[in-house]
Image: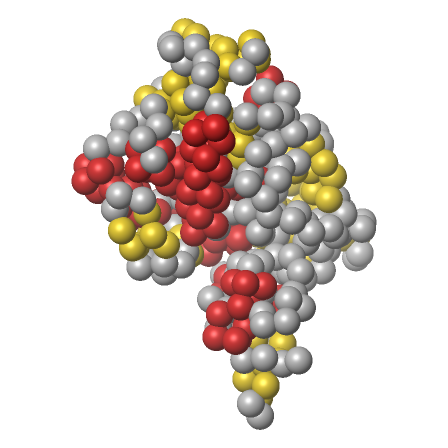
Length: 383
């Protein structure tokens, strides 16, 4: 119907525009699935889906309250397929609200079990911990890393994080829209200081079993018992691999930590998402670098508009060699062999960054009895 409400709601500001008083799609590739348009649509015409008919996406199954197929186990954030910070915060709050309401009806249980165990201290885990304190739940939050941040800690230094205003329980409204990784983590530290919530760092969950209505959870620091569990780990399973010779060499990495460490190097980045494009952008700014970006598709369809525009400009300026429609065939100590429609090519590669995503933490999910579902262009029903 061309309502302007969805145009006003779109955080990207370029994907949808108003023409002659009606909303129109101006840049289909500019849509990155925020979901704000779905909420704003007055006739419920928009549906968000995961995966496509050709390329399915494996995700844990869970209800609109974020409870999984394993009763008492909830999921929030990137682990459930929604990677934006604001979405993770909202889901963490909604999940714990459901937990608190459920526990009010079922107050029986072991006295040595906490009401809620939160696994992960990223945005979803932070929001969940705040909500647990606001609702008066006993809660322990475990994080396998040494400090606050969750999956965000793996972002390169200086990475710009896109978010939208959100309200954090016990803290108030946070109006950030574009913020660096470091500034976002500093904000979270302030939240912890103001609210007094606590986390347990360097703790790895190694197993779990249900005994009646309580989960007995094994960790690297011993066993604990919890009535309900919220998994907010992000997709921190093992990195996806290319399955080619040479991928095990020491100069092949699954993340870019700091572009300044690679001055003067020839770098090959493999991938077509925001992580790959942002890595190419960061490395191209360093002195003496020679950058090749290989992506198996013929165009960037999954990146933010500003990343797409920037990488195309860098390619036009000769600062990044774009090899779209190419696939890595093998990697040696200083080179890599790629193949595209024109044939095979050998490129210099002092460093190789394979940035094609991570697998789900399947062992953790299986330990809690959480089942997976393959989505092929289907709506999840919880957004």
